[in-house]
Amino acid sequence: MAEAAVKPQSSAAGATRLKIEGLNAYYGESHVLHGVDIEVKRGEVVALLGRNGAGKTSTLRSVMGLVGRRTGSIVFDGVETAKLAPHRIARLGIGYVPEERGIFASLNVHENLMLPPVIKPGGMSVPDIFTLFPNLKERLYSPGTKLSGGEQQMLAIARILRSGADFILLDEPTEGLAPVIVQQIGAAVRRLKESGLTMIVVEQSIHFVSTIADRFYVMEDGHVVDAMTAAELAANRDRLVTYLGV
Amino acid sequence: MFELLGIPPQALFGQLLLGLINGSFYALLSLGLAVIFGMLNVINFAHGALYMVGAFVAWYLLQYAGIGYWGALIITPVVVGILGLVIEKTMLRHLYKLDHLYGLLLTFGLALILEGGFKYQYGVSGQSYPVPAALNGGTNLGFMFLPFYRGWVVALSIVVCVATWYAIEKTRLGSYLRAATENPKLVQAFGINVPVMITMTYGTGVALAGLAGVMAAPIYSVNPLMGSNLIIVVFAVVVIGGMGSIFGAVASGYLLGLMEGLTKVFLPEASNIVVFLIMVVVLLLRPAGLFGRER
Image 1 (tube, rainbow over the protein chains, first blue to last red):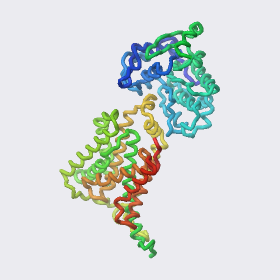
Image 2: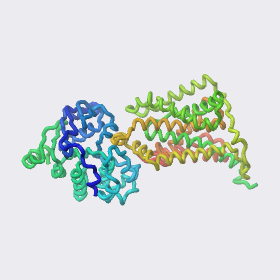
Image 3: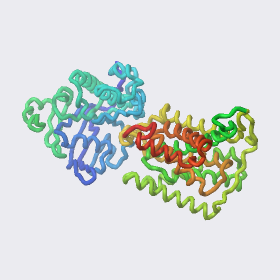
Image 4: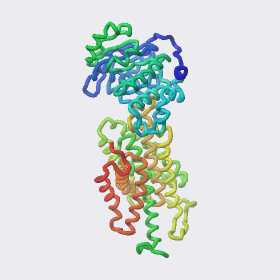
């Protein structure tokens, strides 16, 4: 089964894996993140919530080193990554599932799946991936972008699981997908959490993440404006709804 | 002997072979240009000059090191490839953030410097380079005479083009290349060292030009201007095939060589412009080229 294929975390749960302090990010002239502080512990699923343009995607892109310029500190597993090139950051064990999914049109499904190199041992095997996402197996030699939106999302997640990354950045995994597909993706993400992967999930609404996240950060205009644990969520629901404007 | 539309077969097939030879060089050069353009978004104007440098490296090897054609076939692409790595690392790299036009201007300048330097040293009369002994002579195929060396050039260029196409379309490394052509940042975020891939791609692309230079040395004389004569046609070939399309570059290379050959038989006056006429028509009807995808 899929769960068994992912290596259990060797180090103690609860240790800090990612600590972002005073992060500022810029795209050319525009200053998109203003002193963001975020901490993620081993085995946690942390949700970044906020409206469109709040800085959630920019935060993930900053972790991967994909923004134009960034200042501040991003320490991952004890390594300062703010000055590292993206491929060096990925090799520390971070897997990135971008918002636009990033499926390559000139590669078929199989090539897309095999594209990310194995960066850590303990990644999911291809048969286990097909157990988790049976749709992919049927479309293995179609061009990647001929898949439906939901299948592309599955492929984007699957290829990162194969790489052995044990810290996963998921950017709006349910955006634009039909409810039945959202359920399927939700079930997969829940299983990954149970297998011990650490994740940051970006979403615009609390609907999808409320059942999987351990902690929530709320972003607005490039700042973190609120934070709460899953236990505090119910009591603060009204406040969250105001932030997110739903 | 039969005649075709009043043309003796010897003349027809002779011109077709000549077209195929030219097409072999078009294909090899436009292949390198297409690979470089796809990955670097740079229109490598120095390609013709590096092809010329390849021919001169072969000539140097023979002249000063006593290394003949077969050795040159291996050593020259490596030498020109390393020159490419240096150009990419020290110059082109700094221009990626700017408009594509700057890469074109830089490589255009490099081409002028290389050609000017060789012209200063060797004039434009050209140095002769012997056909390798093993490929001297030829055979009568009945309908035409086939010099062995020319047959070898066509065969080798087809093998190199097919091998390059296979490497890009069917191998793991090729899938990295295709993916990085589409979205280099994401590929790098998967842990692949894209900057090194870009350098290697440029090196490999110009190594193909160097290889073409060696192959050309025994046919055309080794001449500082041999690249600039060819490169304009090759750019037309790339445009016709479709910018960045590997298959398009190769297929239209051979196709246009043959078209030129045919035109020489039936309308010799038009043979120098036929490629450009086709380019104009293709640009008007299919701006992305015969095999290109609209971006």
